[in-house]
Image: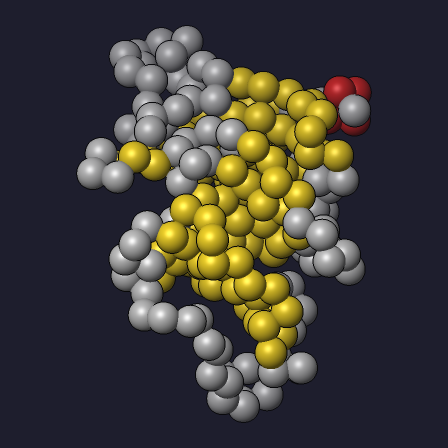
Length: 194
């Protein structure tokens, strides 16, 4: 049901095994839907409520775990390999960022935080403590890299997978949470790095 109360039916091909993530764009005009079919292939669909059609569809990646929009309209999702797929706003191309899983966009949409947590069938997500900060407009250039999630903090004995991340509103800090519950806040100087 869209913001005007109209019902929409979004075609996803065959039956899904898992529906992993759904999100609206900031203007509520689009939705991104990600998941996995039983044969290990994933899907990511971007549906436009105004035109009542899928404006993007991918059915041939590995399982897709997360798909989101930035505040400026970019979209990103990642699969099990791990690869992140970036769909720049107002462009039809898809940028494949190899070996990185998507964590979050910054509030302005200018930056992205990435990790490298792949997924092994039967074993789950591959533990990884690395966090990479890149500019959305140039995702191949790394602005910052952190690989010590909590291991240098007094009292923290184990390094655990970064489960999620969030930029502060001014984009001067990055908060990450490990799967062990450890929270790390880093002060960033991305203007200096870029």
